Length: 563
Image 1 (cartoon, rainbow, N blue to C red):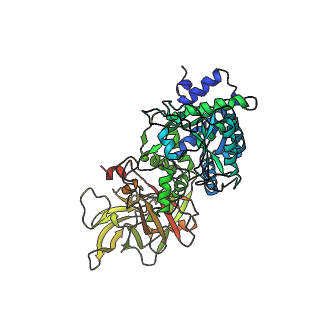
Image 2 (cartoon, rainbow, N blue to C red):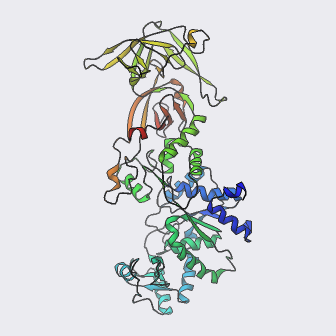
Image 3 (cartoon, rainbow, N blue to C red):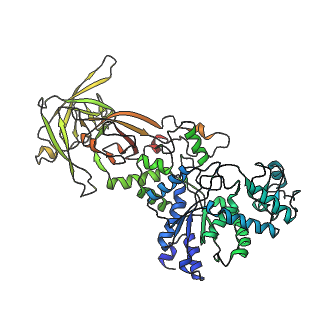
C-alpha cells in the first residue's frame, strides 16, 4: 500500500472505494447542515472541517444547508451568525440551502407514503405513544390508530396542514416495525402541528417535518453523495436508509443518486460544554455577556477573544477523523493559537499590575527614543519606536525587596536588564503606611544600552523586565480570561448541574499601562505583550478607551496550577 493510501482517514477510504467501484467523480457532493437554533461552537468545527475539507480535497461542491424545521427555536440571527462564522474560517460553500425550501416536496412524499400504507395519522397523547413504543428491552405494540384507512389518513393529514387541529392533537407517523430492536424504527413521528411563525416561510405552514424525515430527504433532494454526521446519529442510519429507499421508488428518475450516511466521533473539549441549550442558559442567565463572550466556546467568542482561523483549522487537522469518542485537551487548542501568533503577532510592552520605577541617576527631563523589533520571527515585520524616561512602570511581581537566588528579577543590590534598554540595579523602595511598595528606586548603567555596540551592552545579566515609560504610557482596560469551568468534564456529572463547576475567576478586569505605539491599534489587532501572553483589541474598544482581551498566556500555567 502506498504512503498516500495509508494516510487516508476512514471516510476518505470509503470515498475512494466508491470511486473505485464506479461512482463518477463528478457525483461527489458534501454538505454541512446546521440547525439555526444557536451559534456554532468549537465542537462544530470538526464537522465543518471534514465536509469542507473533503470538498477542497476532491474539488467537489459543498452545500451549506440550514435544517430549519423547528420555528419555535430557530431565528434569522442564528442563520446570519453561522454564515459569518464559516466564512471567517475560510470555507466557501457552493449553494446556500434550507430544508424549508423542500417543505412542499416533503409533504408530497409523505402523502405518497400514506397512499402506500407506509404512514398514518396517530391521535394518541405523547404519553400514550411513549408507553406504546416500549423500551430497549421490551418491544412496542401497535397503537389504536395504526390501521386507519388510507382515506381517513389522507383526510386527517390534509386537515392538519390546513390548520384545523390544535398542537399535540395529531401527528403523522411512519409505519415500520413496532417490535424492532432499533427503537427509532418503532413508527417514528414524521410531522407534528406547530402553530409558530417560521423565520423564512412565515405562517404558510402549521405542520413541520421532524428531523429524521427532513434531514435524509434533504440530502437526497440535493443529491449529496456522502452524508457525514457525528456518532450519535449512527442508530439513525437504518431509519435514514428506510426513508431514503421508500422515497427513491417515486423519484429515482429525478433524483438518481442515493446518499450514503457515515459517522465520525464528535469533538469534545476539556473544561468546555458543547450543548447549545446549556450555552443558551449561560447567555440568558447573564453568566456571560452574550454568545460572543470571549469565554464562550462559540466560534464568535473565539474570534472576539483573538483566535485566528488558521489556528482553529490547524487544531482540527491535528485532532483528525476517528470513530471513537474521546475528550481533547483544551491545551492543544491553546498551543495552536500560540504557535500561530508567535509567527504573526508583533511584540509590544504592557504592564498589567504596575508599580513605579524611578531611575535615580537618569538625567531629569531627559527622554530617549529606543528602537525595537516588531517580531523576531518575521523578518519583514519592521521596527517601532519606544520612548524611555526617568520614571517607568514595571510589573509589581517583578520586584522583591528580598529574594532568594532563584529569583532572577529585580531586587535590592541585584541587576536586571530593561527590555531594549539599559541594565539597572535595585537600590531601595518606598512604602506606604500599610507597608505596600509604592515606588522602587534603581540606578542604571548608561553604557549598557541594548544594541549600542559597547562592551557594557554585551554584559549578561540573568533577568530581563518589560516596562513602559510613565510619562508616555497609555492607560488601557485589560480583560484577563481564564477557563469558564474549573472541572475538566463539567457536563459529565449526572449528580451535579454543570453550573456548579463555573469558575468564579474566569474574568478579571485590570487597569493597565501599554506603550504609546498601541494608540493606533485597530479592533481585532493581535499582539504579544512581552513576557505576559497574547492579547487583541476588543470590539468595544475605541481610540480613546483601549480594551484588550487576553487570548492566551505564553505558556500553559493551568496544568501546573492544578497538579
